[in-house]
Length: 387
Ligand code: SF4
Ligand code: SF4
Image (tube, rainbow, N blue to C red; front, side, top):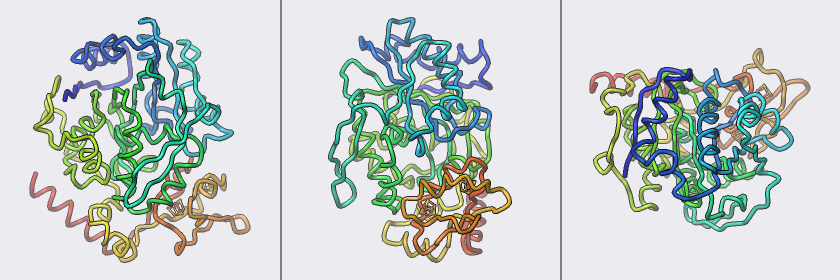
């Protein structure tokens, strides 16, 4: 399984073009990705209607370059993602993230998945089957999905890498509902692994020129890893992501199950790496999300730990602009308006952190108990001693 790694400092041409060309060359370049197929769905991460400089969404310059190249090769190109609150607001996402401009410049078609015909699929989750509704266009044998995740952490799943980016192909409010159905990190990870397996005709390019650590995927610290990654296997790419930031992939909720369902790869040694070596691009100051300590525990201990360690969302009343996005997305109806204030009923909260993902002004932080703070200090010390 090949994974290609290239350094790239910023989104300016010609450096970006050189890096992208080198990145995809081990796979036969644009024609190698197409392999005779005539349609391309570019799937960026458009999680929040924020400008590209915030590093929350896939940079439009990468999407633009790919659109131009695939169109020049004779393919029909679409660009689509279904962020949590897309219904009725998708135009705002397209405008703010720069995808509208890409479409205007290149002729690629913006897809609103909520309006496409969809198909119900039954999948195996943790201990139970569940159903998802998927846009029918995904099943066209003439289509390749070019998965374009962003290099970020995630409060619930530790990283939001290549595999999790497929979750955005499920339209409507089913994503928050699935959070409610699978509230524990490892169960949620198994569900994500099953969903990602629907999208087999794919090729992944990760935008790691800028990214987010700490409390990602929206509220964390902007970082500049200065890298691009590519692979035909989203799982292989996530294993490399983990190696770059010094994470054990067996402790990331989605990866062990994704390896099991795909019959590997399980470790880095099973991969063929091209371009830079991991050592050359390793990040030594990558900050994990606060609640990720909880997600590393066995499933049976997570509920108890969540109660003891008390990682929970909290509203910063000064920053809050009372837009109501968190109220609309919360799958447990735990956030509500009272008079002119946003309140959280913590006894209903399932700690999914969907609210922190959609807040446009980063007014939803995560409060933790002193015990969690101590565990973090111990973990950071251990990391320093080892490195
Ligand atoms: S309050 Fe936030 S973290 Fe709690 S259930 Fe609702 S969306 Fe999830
Ligand atoms: S906390 Fe954020 S998402 Fe919720 S109402 Fe305030 S500004 Fe909007």
